[in-house]
Amino acid sequence: MKAFSYHRASGLEAARQQAATTDAAILAGGTTLLDLAKCEVARPEQVIDITRLPGLDEITVDAQGLRLGALARMARVAEDAAVRTAFPAVAQALSLSASAQIRNMATIGGNLLQRTRCAYFRDPASFPACNRRTPGSGCAALDGITTNHALLGTSEACIATYPGDLAVALVALDAIIHLGERQVAATDFFLLPGTTPEREFALAPGEIITAVTLPASRAARRSTYLKLRDRASYEFATVSVAAGLELDAECRVATLRVALGGVATIPWRARAVEAALTGREPTPEAVREACLLAMQGATPRPDNRHKLELAPRLVARAIETLLWEERA
Amino acid sequence: MPSVTTLLTLSINGQDHVFEAEGRTTLLDALREQLHLTGTKKGCDQGQCGACTVHLDGERVLSCLTLACQAEGRAVTTIEGLAGPDGALHAVQTAFLEEDAFQCGFCTPGQIMSAVACIREGHAGSEAEIREYMAGNLCRCGAYPHIVAAVRRAAEGLA
Image (cartoon, chains in turn blue, yellow):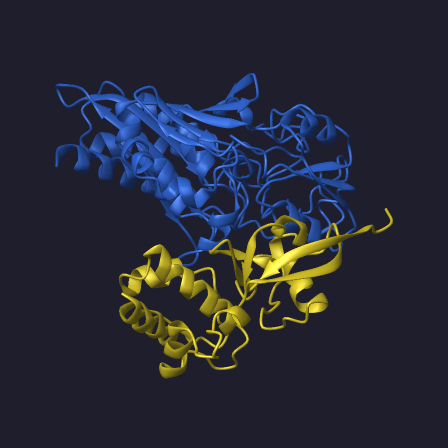
């Protein structure tokens, strides 16, 4: 890990100004930044610790919805009774993330900004080619082991998977990311790699996430997060699904929200599945048929082709789970 | 950039320690290399194994991903601080001995620190819950069945 200077931010505006310089990095929980600094992927000259700024860690749930301060720790949000009732997919996504220790450390804002777990991205010494890390250098992953790489939202420049769980739930439930005054929809916050994979988030230099809000809805209240992993726990998603459902008086689908993790370069909203079931009676056949659209437009690689079948099945399981809960 | 050190005071196991730290010095390296509290172990040094688990204001965290500067003004508890002033072992330490919950012992301080917090959080209600909430602590010897038994025993004893 390269040497850097440590600064404790005196206020949000001061932190923004300090962070706007090229070689500065904001430090919150530190679980991503210090990890990447040890890999020498992150090489900050200055680290700006914002964790002692007051008023940024509150969790509020009311009739309008949920507001999570950017510095709220994952564990606190995951265990919050009101969040678990009104936004179960959010609480479940957080509970199924990382380990108890990391959930005590990592913040909501930092969680959204975690970087890909692509092994080629994380190892500059062995793999100099990485467009995400060094624009124009190439992509070692394209001809590498592709099991954990993305099938959706990829480009010739980058096929790295977005690793987070929380963001998948946020994208499904129409969250808003607050950057001080400016607000960005969660669905617009994560950027497709295209020809500029080094631009991962809709953040200008010096901008800091201050809060995340989610509107209250029946689909949010009847939501779930399912996560398949290569081991039982403490692992990133092979495939994950956030889903929310509301039925109308005739038991047809009034609202369906579906997003996928583990298979795309960004938290992936599966709008084709939503559209196929909305207004329809969710019979097992209709659900199965709609879920086949989850991976529409996918570009599989030799080692991740199985996810073409795995992801639709997990979406179907999520929807069936919600239907079962709704009817219970 | 040249490394710049600052004088840092950390409260560890109830006692203040003053030492020179760089910005990049992790809590783990400060504990082991500068304060010679070597009970906390460095396994992967990347937040993947849990061997370096300590408590910060009573909550379990990874000291390899915590900067020493971040711990300023907060209470750090390490494995050396668990036993009573008379040397009496903590109930979780005793349970690990009774259940033979280790082989090589390298992960054990992290396992015990994690287990103490796991029980305090109320996440030691069943074997399945213990496995889930202890998942951040890896044991390469594979002593997991005994670790789970020790956590159960200690949780029942502390209830």
